[in-house]
Length: 329
Image (cartoon, rainbow, N blue to C red; front, side, top):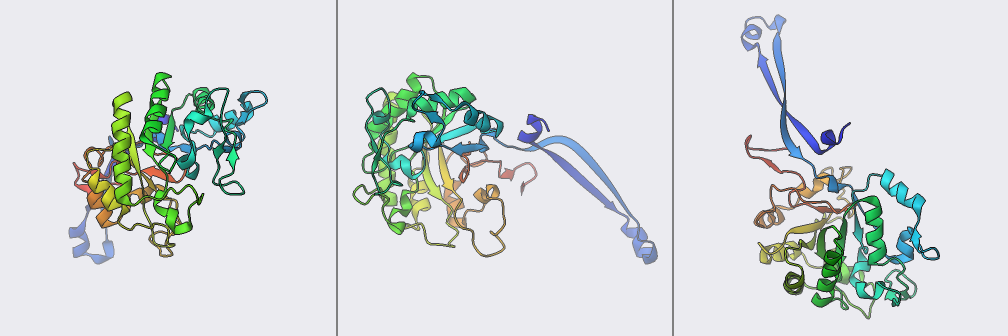
């Protein structure tokens, strides 16, 4: 199958002409005629960036960096290439809200808190920092996707300086997201108790606006996104039921995309169980969809997926075939 075949779904028209008259006259001779017409009309164009993945800064970039040799693990890099990964998210999920990028570059680096270490928050030396991440992406000839620190040790200045650092080095980034799943910190307990990352929706909106202002001053035109979720209700995760409505409602026209985390436990009903997660971006609640579609430039426009369990649902595929007046796919 060619790339164009993968990235485009050809439309088709099916016309059925039923010989109803003949059937009415003689029910023993039910005769039906059908004609199928195949056209090259494209209904949906799927962004190749849906084949992204997540890479963490800890444990030497999940084994991709060889600190003793100060080089990438060539064999693992080729495994990634063979897997068809089209972009990588860094510096991780929960890890991102404790990651100070400035401590992970240069020859004199500083250990960074690791929420998954024992004891929680034990510092780890960042061998796989932003420079090593950029080297990996350049080797694979793919862009990166970066999650900015929205935790207690994050700041607009820290975020803006990282964005500028990438731009000054001509490193292609699909977009920068402010934080990761901070709406569930109170549900499961803070990953590092003395470094809280929890934000109410209102606090998060104010943080995003501060980040945006700082970034625009040093790197105008940067694509900046926010974090959200589709909570199926199977297990309690989201501490703020109005998260999506507040965030999308107040940031209408001020953000470029929303990262919707869809990889949580499925509902036990037939509507969710066994479904591939990709189409679930289109199964937001009625309230979420109503607010979501108010964001200018989002509905009906393809935006990159951030890989694995994360989807930029704001137009990942064209949700409405306006010419035919029906939902497609």
